[in-house]
Amino acid sequence: MNTDELPGRTGVAAAVLMMNVALLMATGFAITWARDRGVLCDGSTKLCSGGDLTPALWQAEMTFRSTVAYGSYAAMALVLIVSAVIAWRHRRYGIVVMQLTALAAVATLAALWEPYVPLH
Image (cartoon, rainbow, N blue to C red; front, top):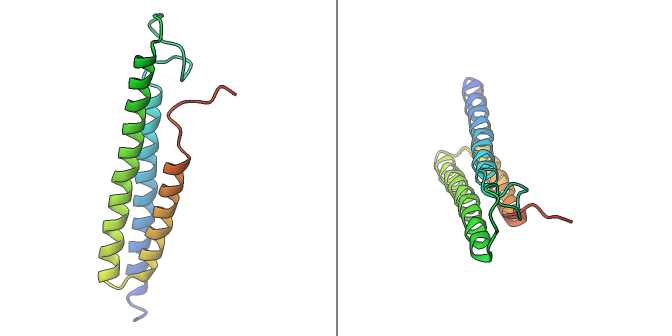
């Protein structure tokens, strides 16, 4: 590697890191929006409209939240995998390591996510 390439490679790595942060923030925004969209006021048991919460309505809301969350995590994982493959083909192994680390973080977040706020 030439020393002339170092500033360019550093700039690319910084841009990839900023992209990862932006993706994580967008995913967090989508999940927060799905959880706080105004159907269940306390997060898991009380309807904002004041009506009775039926088991079917609760199940539908939890399914919607899960679909948004896991869909967002899957989209982020897809972007990370594609960018890691592109980096591998261009022999940018530092970016590959960065993307695989971010992918591990996304997998951990997806495994720990719950569609409702625990009451206890």
